[in-house]
Image 1 (cartoon, rainbow, N blue to C red):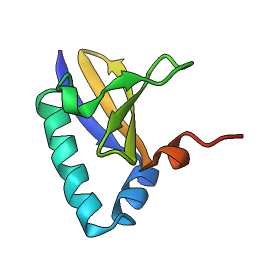
Image 2 (cartoon, rainbow, N blue to C red):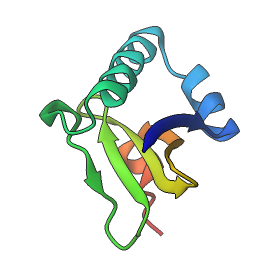
Image 3 (cartoon, one colour):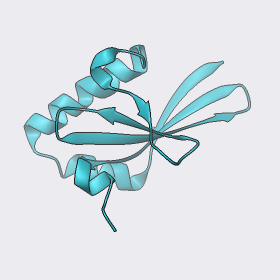
Image 4 (cartoon, rainbow, N blue to C red):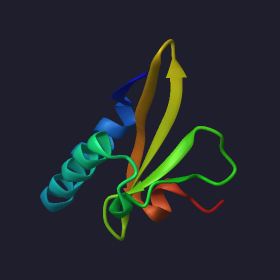
Length: 92
């Protein structure tokens, strides 16, 4: 099975809106996730109440939500949204 990585337009827009320090941290986090998704510093975990969505920590405030699913013989990792914890997990 091949792991592939994609991003949504929303993720791309949110990523570009980050400050330069956060962009640099995010790039390093994504590179690490692509090499070793089980690395402890990512704090990779399933989003409660979902089947295919997972959370990655960029730092103590920024989170990436990734949708993981299969397509043919590939595992697709779709970078869905990025932002602060409150932005990606809004309280209704």
